[in-house]
Length: 240
Image 1 (cartoon, one colour):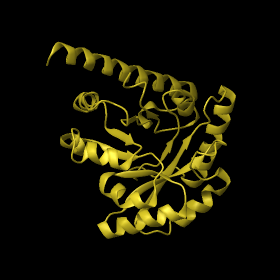
Image 2 (tube, rainbow, N blue to C red):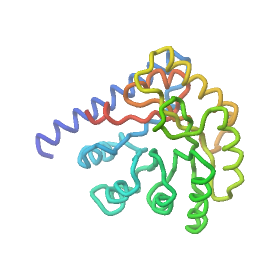
Image 3 (tube, one colour):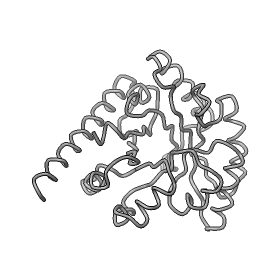
């Protein structure tokens, strides 16, 4: 391996270990078990060579992409295709109905169901493909007009409707915190999301498929993990 590549690999693995250490510390503060937290690497803006280095090192096992067509080009036909089988790939962006078929073909999970309309479309294409798709419902945790998601008071209603769709398997909630939120506001929003998650996804029996509360990104994953997030989505801190 060339010197420059070795240097970059060392930097990436240092970033990864630092994030893992911070997650462990956050779990310690909250009395949680670090092994219960899975890191989702957001690879949307990452260089393919960086992603390859971390997959080959065993650091990335779960990845997330925001755009269907970009992900398909990268993971199905592009530079990451040879490593696709080693990664559980999540869609974490806003999904349009006309991209549902391609999303089913490209991803292992869809984490951003925000309406019955999109859920029904994903279910239709999953049925046609003979797949049962694990999905998560996106909670709207801020007041931004451009932010997708269902308001927390409507989350249980949407979940109940999704559970009637035979080719979808609801497995949790995803949320994005308000940009620039204070530590107090972050704690309040994350705590509210955890209450909804605990209500709708009680602790599973040993050996049952895991359910996920996906809160926290590079700027706020520590308070998210302290609140109970077990699938933080981290990109810029990992690939810095």
